[in-house]
Length: 466
Image (cartoon, rainbow, N blue to C red; front, side, top):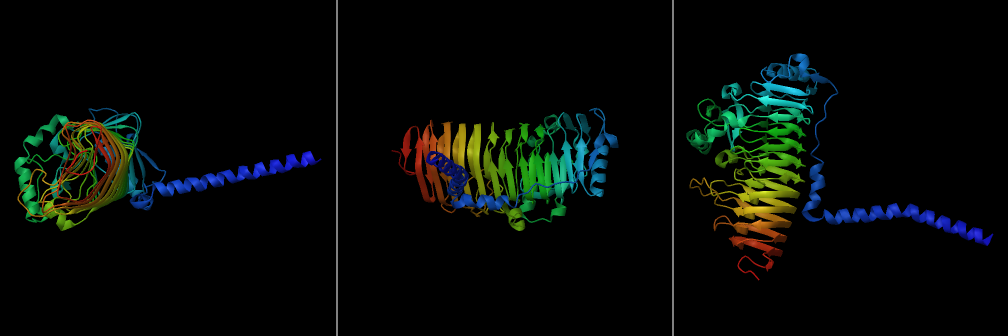
């Protein structure tokens, strides 16, 4: 009997420990999470509370029921637009482009409470005729407001709007638009001067004859935006461009588009933005964070803020802040990204025309293979300078846990100007295996180099290499 009681008591203790272990484990995990998300990173969960993808009613509007055909010689645009209109009028839902090959002779205009779903096996191709993207719409072209060709997929002041599905969107941009950059000079100068002179936006009319390329997908002044799962090819210009938007999610998208100025995703003057699980193979910046150019950006004064970028892969170009950042950029969190080959891995660019500010960036766990010009590069004399004296404020930037196999120029660059110094820059746990020169830094106030290694040597200051 005593032996039996001993066994029973032992079993009770073991059962008690079994119940206690999950509690102890949860407590340890909670402590670890708290430790991981300490400091500035503790703000991320609060930002994520404000980033909630839109949801839609269960109603399905199949575009083939409105006359769309799986035939690239047939214009399915009227049918797609009719399905979008009906969906919007009836309170919302999903406009379905089912498996097949479809052609749109011009812009697809999205509306509130509509999810345009390009299904797995569906391919949506766009016209190569520039006039098909008229009439003009209000847009932003490299940071300046104007009326120009409509983006291929366009949403204006919509609430609850999405582009989803595992299908393919092909802009056919190389056919007509890729050569326009060689012809756009006069129009570009005119537009920028209009912005500088604060010419009313309704007078900034471009379009036919001016060669300012339309972008691929633009959400203008929208709230609750989702772009998810689609594959995007051959854009004429910038690819995913949220402007003046709030609550934006862009995730699980594959982009393969290498035309001139083919930025992958450019959140501009937008708040509460999540970009995650993306795969970029593009002809310009993979992600470029912007907020308007020069006087036009100051006039509007809307910053891009509360942006989270994570788990992204960049095949050719990587992450840029600027140069159109005159409205300000702040509270940016970037983590767990991989870069194959690029000019600059992490690139901050501005000049004395821009003004504005860039503050409170935290970046961690970045892996890069080859960066031609630098794995980290702050540049305050970016090209296109017109002679202004409006320095950009750079401050409170922490970049840590970065590895790079090879840089073909200077590994780490942070070059402020006497009138545009950089403030509170921390580089921690940075390792560059091979570079002709380790570091080049000027006009940086309160620079911290903590465990920074280039070519196997510890770098302790901007002036000295151990």
